[in-house]
Amino acid sequence: MAKKKKDNDHVYDIVKEQILSLKIKPGASITENALASELGVSRTPVREALNRLESDGLIVTNNRRKRVYVLTIREVREIFDVKICLESAVARWATEKGKPQNFANLERILGEMKTISNQKSDDEGKEQETLNRWLEKDRELHRTLFEMAGNQKAEQLITTLNEQWHQLRVSMYMLEGRMERAYREHEDFVKAILEKDAVSAEAAMRLHLNNLKRELVKILNLFHYPA
Image (cartoon, rainbow, N blue to C red; front, side, top):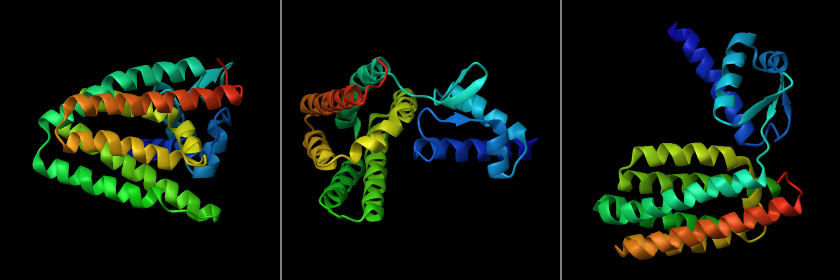
């Protein structure tokens, strides 16, 4: 039984990574047979993985066919409305509850993000590597904020929401200048936290997420995503 669960989890992790990394594109059809053949497993763990991914909101079923979900503009707005409320509060809680080591970690991570955001390359492979490093540092920074805030429910909710728009996030950060703008916005709320200014930290986080929401909706409208 334990081995079966481990196999199911392994297949789930693989397919989820393929979706989040855009190896499987938004809107792409997914079949149990094709995935089972590709991964060298039976259809049972694939079926279990797809059911879990559908519960996560990453896959939908229409007329018995499964495909990677394509977010609508309305859903993106709703995701960010929730993120703005929760993550702004997290920034305030982190400022109020953080320990000295947490503040030191935030300062270190921000410095590393600045270095990454300043890197330029015309090489597509290196550009992707830079983006991956940025996204990992971004995750590390927000994990630190959640740790400081001490609210696991908020962390769980935001993690689930972030997975739903992660594909768009990867594409967005490939745009010229977006990483540099994101660094400056991160710098604003992190510096407010380091200065123990909870009100400014909350406001700066809210501004950052509102800017991101506005840019994202503009891009989705430009590419005629469903309303």
